[in-house]
Length: 229
Image (cartoon, rainbow, N blue to C red; front, top):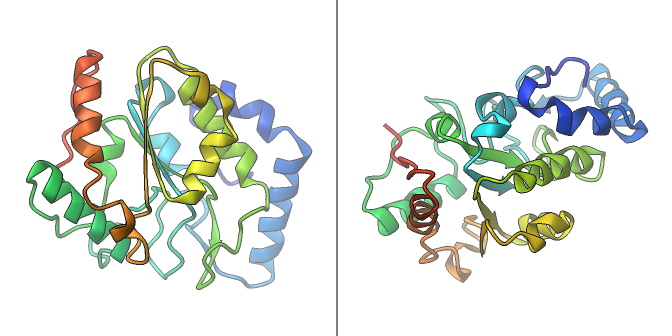
């Protein structure tokens, strides 16, 4: 964790967690994995990109993913996003399909979701690293406590916020943060994951984008421009 800079707005929420033995153990384990020659994604210095691009006081919507893409050149610290020039992954293709059906927006040719992050959409994975080619390989290694703290901090704020939980992993995340369930001024949207394996089981037709904007506009927080140019 030493190679990652904690953005100023997130420090009060994260510093107690990062000082705990579990976080120190995670940092040591990651260092050992890389020293052993294993390729870890995303690269060092980008693993907290979601927090850097979306300050805590600007969060309007939280979209939870499982773990980073595990192919070369894909993960860059934002859930579901890939950098410009990288082929759009299947889950994001399905997100774009639902966006088109929901809001009539054309499907983007790029998978870089930075414009969403800069508008207050926290694109947070449950686990923030992965070994190349091995999906889920870093689950249970200590990231949960850190990302739980991020979600809890967003849920503890007074500003009405939307939490979009796609798939079983995201729903479990919510159950581990009780403040989400107690909150009466947030909107929680759940559905199947956009993966090709599950998108037809309730993700398609769930209309998360229009629901998010209707809620945010009603709460006086303004709509999100979901277009990716």
